[in-house]
Length: 390
Image (tube, rainbow, N blue to C red):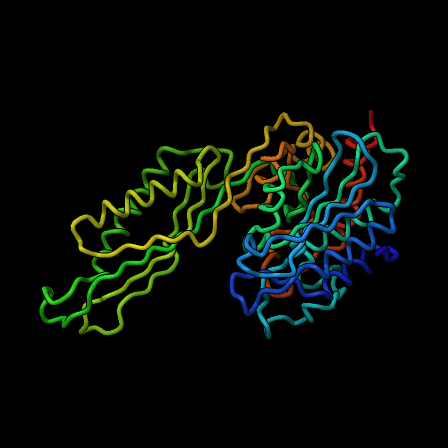
């Protein structure tokens, strides 16, 4: 399988050139296996023991061609995992001034889909591990590449299902502008669908308005939002409380018809300590209570399983090492990652990468060239600390 590992920029160009969009929309979703095979070949050339793990389509919304990669150099207990996802979000065709699938260097930046989030980190990892002598390792060095982080979290779920920790310490290279992140919020996205009965608007008794029912539901959700903000506060976050966003609503078809169907999609960001399943159960209880005696039919559907919040103690060794190497104290973010799945396997996990979140999921996504050398230095320092030191 081995293919000669290229230098960082050539590796990134090759990764960007292979489309690997993951999406809940079947027509947009693509396999990530070609990206996994590229990385596997390069790491095998560098002496790693390579294991490609196909991901069950049942975890990936029925999509096929998904895989994780676990590449290991050295043996023994403990060790460091350098982790990143191989998929990208869809792109806005026609809004890019550069070809999203061709790495373009301009103005001190490397443009291309995934350069920031997060194929750029994977290319940097390949460069950082190039000179590592496996025989000198006291603890293993692991490169982990996953599937579908941007959609179903299938790769992270597959790792959790396998129940095997890839290492003792883990760095996930999501875009954090090289500031360590030791905690992030969890995410739930839920769909609420109400069915009533249509009728002529001149007589309310002729129908059952789903729109009226959704008004009651929304009022209760907004009240719950205020309660959550009062009862779950953590000043370590920029937004120090859970958020509940009423993101999408649709209902009815004509002003002179009683609305027979109405649907609402919401997004909830959970604080550490809030359980996804418990929060979902509370949501259902409140919605059903709001609709009591309404005669409306309710269907509640999670838009995806949900991501737990993550919190690695600031005293953890990997957090302290990341702070020392970057010169920045570890902080928090509101976006989700695969961190909870790795933490759940016993890995001390920190989120740390060279990209800027402001460039992620945007047309003309880019990675600043000036971050390449500092990030390589941080990766070398982490490898020295957790794989070479006694």
